[in-house]
Image (cartoon, rainbow, N blue to C red; front, side, top):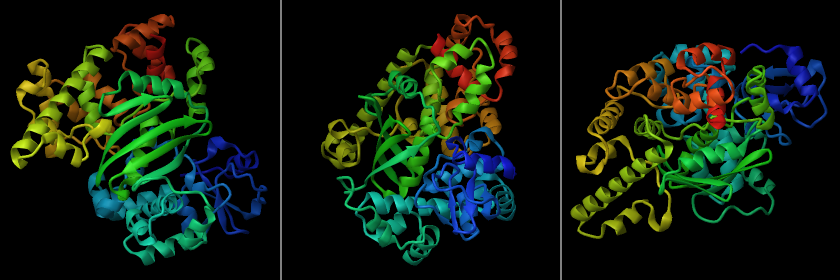
Length: 499
């Protein structure tokens, strides 16, 4: 990543929060690195170096500033815009792929050799995949040290370190403190009650129109999976090592998150998926500036700055929602999805009772189901395939489209992970029976995080365009929307709101 020194230095001198996460400021005279908005005295030009990632700064021998905590800055919005290999790699590293599968697993998923992947990441990010994953592990470890009362050995392995020694050495290098000193520094603040419960702040670039986010999610909330109550979004999570539950409350300057995890190794992917769901790494100033150049959108942007694109914590879940939502209202789709999830729960109970000879409800509660109103993750592709025909409650064509999707996910011919090649994923989805352009593009916007998708054939989008006095046939709207690039997904959300 190329960075202009003068432009970066001006951002540091003005303490501009918009650039937090875009780059990191290394101060050679003090041996620390900071976020651009650090409130400390602006360092002299000759003592400053700029880095594209925290891992690159750490590789240069600098430690994280204790005052501005650069490792807690919002992520770079580049990884939303960029669909190249580096962008895909960064999304997968954030989701914990290197911790779970190593660099060979990451390279395999991207279709490149380890050496070439390392070379590309070094050129763009100033650090290879191992160093980038190591920086993330250090941040995860610090969160666990400060928010739980777990022993240091437990934290080391939960954060993804291979040994306690590696954990100690990394934290001393990154934070210039022993792990025990980081815990002492938290003072008398008590860890959250309950095993596996973690509270943390998810930073974002202001403004954030939280009401629009919560309204969007509330209308589509599925009973037993998610709920919006008193300004807080709750949902169950299906994670690589187990299940989880998250409560997200937008506040001034950050989103307060409380996570309950069955396995603490899932902290990094859970945080990455929550950030992705709420689109917290977006750059709203740049997005709104582009869209506000259109006089038709300018009044809405002035009235409601910081609109985000609600995304997904689970690509398969979003794909099932999209197929069921084809050519029906949001309310109708929600009813059908609720019925499908209820059918899955009933089958699960029946199978458990048959196999184990005890109450299905008892065992479902023991296995992490919705006991006492507890939220659970969405059903998996394998679970959907296990449902009999009678449980779907929908036309045969739609049922078979869901099964075709599930089979493609299980056999690996369709990948719905966050680091997928967007164009290839859309092409493969369109090859499946029952999936058309609207569904594939909707998934591009919400599951794959493409910021430049316009659903011009969507009825609500066309109604919103008409309400704003814009062209509202698919062909004319497509031509008109060229001026909104590369943020047409955000224009789609605003057209939905206008409708």
